[in-house]
Length: 434
Image (cartoon, rainbow, N blue to C red):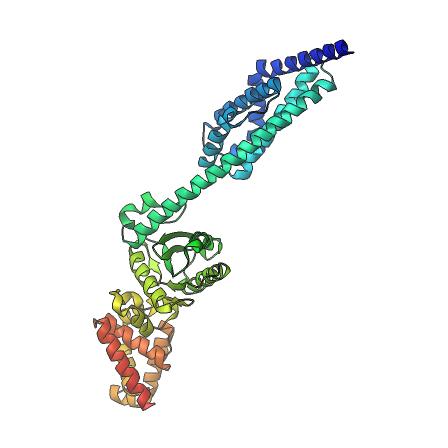
């Protein structure tokens, strides 16, 4: 019985070796079959612009065949040292932009094709089912070892990419908020973040969160780009602040300010922290990001722990109050429709601006303002209506009238401290008369 068993084992081993020799001798045919299958079944591989991809796949398949043959002959699954090409290939595919599921799909296709070839080779040499079954165990051992190495390699690659992304985004944000974007923006751009003069950006600053929450908050800031209102978002932790730079998908900064603030407040709440959050006014092109960052910092400081302050939602007088001590550019604080209205009216001798001032000086009394301007009362009312249509602000509402007068003073050259002082005096006078 022992002799028969020995003879049977020897015959089985001999049949296995004949199958394995076919894999070695016809390796180029097998490589082509596997490569063709991968390129035809996986869209990311088929459409890759990298002309060397097909050749690289063939080299990898060839390495897999050699490693499997060694595993089948020795009966020992390869360790990481026996599969160095897997880590190199995973890194290379990620750099080529192949998605993770397609990388894994390539291994599934390759292993399937290899097993189909083993079955075909067994038939070619006349081996029975016992030979095929005896090769199934080393195949399973090999696939398990290969998949384990793929998983570890992918995790290592993801960590490397995450670290690279952190560094790239930090460099980009620093360049933008320090005014170096014009010279360095293209070189420093992180991923697909758009850097250009026609882009509109928002800068958000979170201040006062625990160190353990920094990484998760940074991830949440990057995910702001999932919203349809946002084209892209990058984030950077600097000292005690998280700075997020958001490129808008369309020109509605006020609504987007509220959206990103709400998202980040929710993210902070899930982490059990309550930072102050400030959002600056929209920056038109990279050159204005420096000022938007200054505004976001001031807004976060004025908001205080657990609160949100977005300058886009404040009146002009309140914006000036927040920004007074920062050295900010006051003209940026004026809403764009208001600034356009004042510029155009002043070019036409300032009739509407003069009417606003007289209306305020007459305690919001249209009849008295008309007498002072030597026009009919209906003319004053018509002009005030035109101002409302052109600016979106209602001159009959005291806060909005003050914003209009303050904006006119800023445009005509008064400094922000003078404007604020005069505005406070106007508020006091109007309040007492009311």
